[in-house]
Structures are given as C-alpha cells and as structure tokens.
Length: 228
Image (cartoon, rainbow, N blue to C red; front, side, top):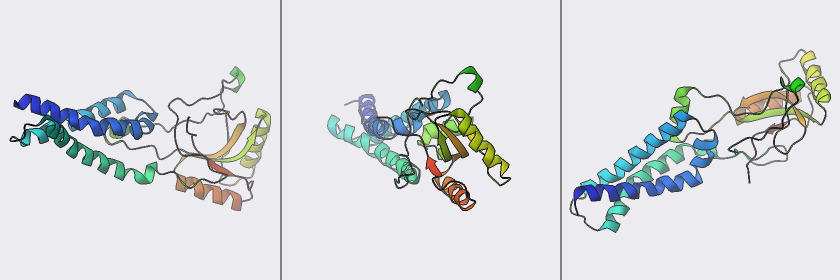
C-alpha cells in the first residue's frame, strides 16, 4: 500500500470520533450559536485531527491492513477529543433540577414572540455576545457558554403588570435593577429579570440576596430550555 493511500485511510479513521462528537456534543455547544469565525475554527479543528490521524498511519510503515490503519487513525484524535470534552464537563453538566430551575441546554434558534411596535424596547432572552477570539476558541475547543442564567422575580401575562413590578423594585433603592423581558418560546408571560447572562453560581447568589432583601420568595433561576 502506498504512503498516500495509507495517510488517507488514517485520516478517514480520525474523522470517526469527530463525527460522533459532532452528533453528541458539538451540535449543542459549538453550533448552538452559529458564527462564521466559530465555524471556520471548527473546520480547522477537523483538518488538524484528520492530519493527525494520517500522520499516525504514516508512522506505522510496516502496517498494510486497511482496517488496522483505519483503527490506528482513530486513536490519537479520539484521545484528544476526549480530553477536550473532559475539560468542558463542569460547563456541560446541568445543575440539579428543581421546581425553580429549567434544563440547562440550548436551542439552535431561540423562539421569541413577535412584539408590537410600541413594545420593541423590551429586552429578549438571548445568549451572551462573544468577541472574535471567543468565537474562534469555541470552534477550536468546543467550549460552551457559561453565562446563560437569568434571575426572574416575577412573571405576568400583562405587560403593564410586569412594568409595574420592575418599577417597584427599582424604587426600593437597593442593589437590584429590574428589567422586563419579552415572552420566550411557549411561555406567553412577560418576565421581570434582576440578573441576566450570569453563570450558575452568580445567579444562585443573586437569587439568595434577592430573597433575603425581601423580594418574592418564588424568585427563581432560568436558562434556555432544551428543544425536543
């Protein structure tokens, strides 16, 4: 078997863990928010792993079995992919489910109810903005969003009621800034939020301070629900 064919078989073997990781992890991490830079970085990651698989196959000059060469191509990329995923375990692992906490996952296209023109100033639930380097890093390493938690102190079917609660909280003169958020996905209510795009630990601490300060006891944490 010539060297070129051996490298190609090893490279194809390297794509096996890449494809599996794409289906299981990357679709809910790298491509939860598709950007050009993140996509290009992901392509570079694939090229690097393909090249690594081909290089490992090249080093085994005495091996001519296509199946064994394919298997050799899988090994190094699989180990690297596993190491990358292991580094993301604390991020990907959802906090314990409670009656006050929604599932920690993401949808590809968040659904937000359309708002009439007079309500356009209302905030909407969205993923945090990324710098160019953060997008590239996410594509290369599969790092996920951390700041995806919101602290909600009230939920109202009427916009005016939500605005009134937000105004009352602001009038208290304490270290809480309330904002009204538009209905999201299948929830028709307007939300009154005192903390947005926080880490889970930050959101949990803010909720604790809010309740201690006398805000509603049903203050709870929220993040983007998993799409079925």
